[in-house]
Image (cartoon, rainbow, N blue to C red; front, side, top):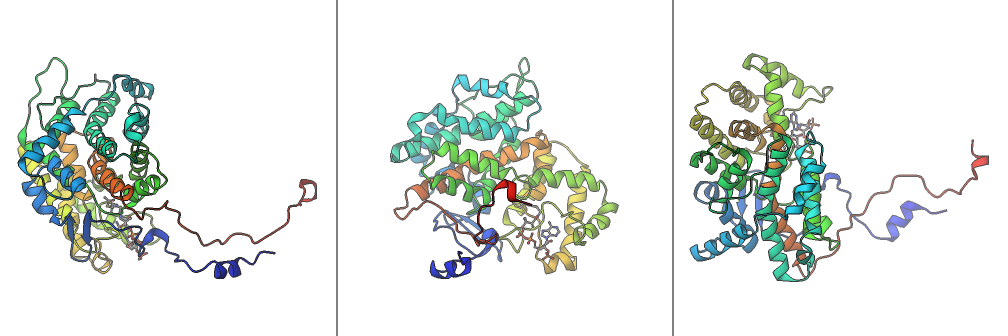
Length: 403
Ligand code: ACO
């Protein structure tokens, strides 16, 4: 008879840390978070400075290479990304194979996973040059794939990339341009989109990034790893939260209903939670939420939206929650998802696209983390242990003798 507890003792000790609340899974030089102080740095640069002064492709360069580019390096990088914006024409059939009412995240998981069937050269993870080409391909093709998923879902023809536009303007055009109508480019909205992408670009070892690393640790190709990350991001406790937060604001409906929902959030017998509140790492205001709130106001003002009931509810909810004992004691502050839903909806996206936009932006973080892992000489296949609590040894009983 196997004594499992004795076996554990023989094989040495390991930590039991469900949810990895205090276990580092890797070393990384990419992103730093101080959750108590509400600090987020990409390669040492504060997120607010990058969002204010930088742009998304510059942030991609920073995350991938470790430094901000010179103007020559940036021009070269933009040109290299732009070169890869098209997807193989045959991939169109993947989209049309889905039901029109498929969730775009389901489409994204499938299509991104299928990229490895089209770009075989980039699946050689031992070739540094191919690793970089795979990275550029992912960053460049995600807006095209995301926009196609959207267009297909609303029954409109695909819009091909326009390489003379910048990254975010091109994406908005691929989503919102329609045949026979002139597309009006709005620099304020495309700047807001770009900023939203910067805010979502990386966030150290969150669930989807850890998924990408774990998948990649087996030597799986980068497209397959990113598809795994997209699948993980879809969950409502992670990337799906902005969709859930906006739904919740609509469900609350008006400012006078807020106390009722605050009471529900505090009631341990009620599974309801304030979506867009709380974070595993931030025990202070999420620095991204502040920038998102500002961006939200800029977008609504540019579009001339004066009264948005969801925004009214959000601002009042934030005020009430931040002065409530329960939220203070548990250090629950608005996270990035609290205002992003209102902003994305104002930009014209349906809620089902929210997590897709998150995936688009996070792709650079995933790929930078994947590259860092693959290039680490101490890299090993990720193989967590478990604390076995099932039955101990028992002998097989023939089916005729089982009661
Ligand atoms: N509303 C009400 N109570 C909450 C909330 C909330 N949004 N979040 C946490 N709590 C409470 C929990 O009930 C728990 O209370 P207890 O100690 O009495 O049991 C305590 O705060 C700690 O919560 P945990 O779930 O243990 O904290 P954890 O770090 O595991 O969870 C999470 C973090 C998942 C983000 C959680 O705060 C949550 O569910 N928030 C709502 C969903 C959301 O906004 N997710 C987006 C995260 S950001 C991102 O992925 C981009």
